[in-house]
Length: 147
Ligand code: AMP
Image 1 (cartoon, protein in one colour):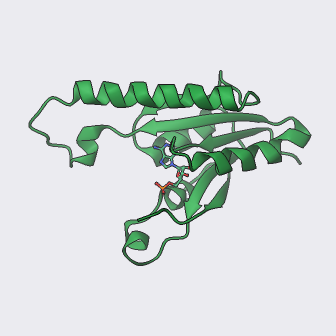
Image 2 (cartoon, protein in one colour):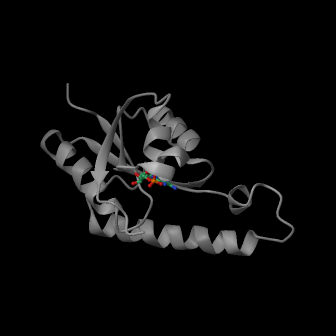
């Protein structure tokens, strides 16, 4: 059975190109719907929750920048379903799983770096998304990030 709706999780770096391309290659022969999702993590969360300053302006800038980058991707890949794509605040695993359920997606596509050492202990979004996923998950192997 071909997939009916593929959800591609994008971090909006240049690394999301191979992830989107893989999803499009899978989708094209069967005209499967492809949507994107990007999660903006609340800054306070990154700082451990208790920050003695107002981050709302910075947070808004981060969100606006993410929106611009999503728009660039929609222009670059016209086959993507804009209407079902999402840009939202939250925790990536939780939001991606919820969206996959809400949109009845049957495949989530994420990028994956072969991690080792300390990076392996810190975990990855791909790993996180895989656990408890409501549907199949495809991890697209990415080149090692420059350190
Ligand atoms: P990472 O584990 O952070 O290196 O990211 C690996 C993959 O997880 C990326 O290629 C994306 O597919 C996905 N990902 C990471 N961060 C986000 C995010 N904020 N929103 C959506 N997907 C993400």
